[in-house]
Length: 283
Image 1 (spheres, helix red, strand yellow):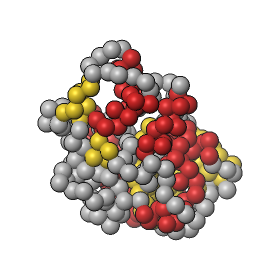
Image 2 (cartoon, helix red, strand yellow):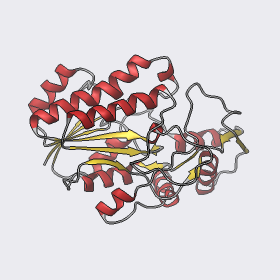
Image 3 (tube, one colour):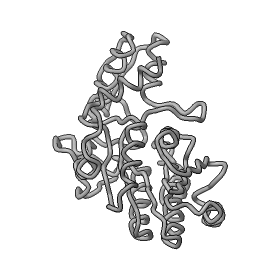
Image 4 (cartoon, one colour):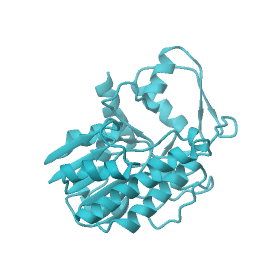
């Protein structure tokens, strides 16, 4: 299988390169601008992939409130351009989306399935949801994969994540305040990449949720990061109201991944197991 990865320098793109078999072309932003339909056509028509995995995204969640057009160009119209090329070429498109399409209900306690109605509550989330809809409409052979709180290694220097940020701040001896009323499942890019690799071996196209197993809050996630890293900073739980951000985050966006796990033969590892493996290779 000939596979093209867009957004190849990011955390998921890097992890995908490590687990995919076949002829893989890993394209960075400098090699393909997915918001440019002419460039998409030129690059993909040269490489003639059987499968395109779109891991490229505008993911500056707060900046998207002001940069609505820029977010839409990458998150909405970029996927549309890829979908149209894949449809014409009879290729498969894997488009990576986000738990943020669910605005979240603070009182909710049951994970959200693929059938749950999206409730985007910020510009970033809306741009991603619209991208999903265009992929669904334009490309018959598609997988839309929603995931959450990705962390992992990136081939581009400077691409950080929550785990690295927490460790760095703790090592600097700073006090921390971390939100404790947003429920989700932070997920290791290596595990999500492995799930995508298994998914594309099938022809069971459609929408899938893919995260590690279990759920937590960012505060409890941070505490586990510090425990595994042998760090003991001063950390205080706060509410979202006490930690205001320009874009509204989901209060509850734990994803029900049973559709995926039934297809690939079992659940992904727990978020605790995933975090332990990631921190072990950092140290």
